[in-house]
Image (tube, rainbow, N blue to C red):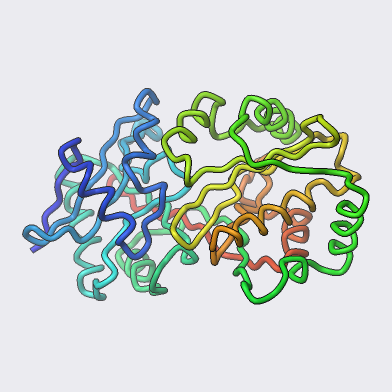
Length: 327
């Protein structure tokens, strides 16, 4: 019999211990990561799923208001993070987890559930049973995004993963010492470039400078900044999250627009790939490839997708599932 308990601080240690032993948990599921959002305008309502004393799954979640409806939503402080579950669960238990979640939400007067599931590249064991059961139980795909990822080939030189034209760009940059990079914590040097880059698409960074500094302080071994220089001038930067023991996510990749024609973006992505490989990351997530400046933000951005494909990247879905109880 599965029971659900609402998260309180007394569960903090068993929650975070569970995440990195689970099948699909990432840094975004941990309470240590989510706690930096304590002053945000949403109410933490994370859940733990037990079978007697055995923890089966957790859901980082919060209460949001959508058209005056109360929605239990995957935690807004994370890029993704639906239910993280034990590696040893079967089809019936998956079904029971979803059934118990629905009953919990109805009993607690929620009008609906919205889950941003972890992409399958982060799963230790690939199994689509959970996504199938969500749809079988009436959840709809409210939003769907395309992201791109790369499986690192540890046997071959990273440069060989790029197409021939990109290889020429990289060789030219290296031979002529056009750019250099350093791994450091000077987010204050990076953030103005990030703001300027986002402004071009009429968007803002997910994190404030203060939040990035807090996260870097919390996770010095998991969040890294690569700063890129021309001579002594900072011209770009990349922020990489080590999301699991085997995966890296390039969360931010920004350049000074003046250097766009000098193929700085290509050099940055190449160095991010080398950095991830050096740290034994099997999979690199290049992030979503959509068009934030349009009225339909999940429209694919074809130029960005083509750019990532030049690095041997392939597509993977990020899906937002929703079920509404009271229309």
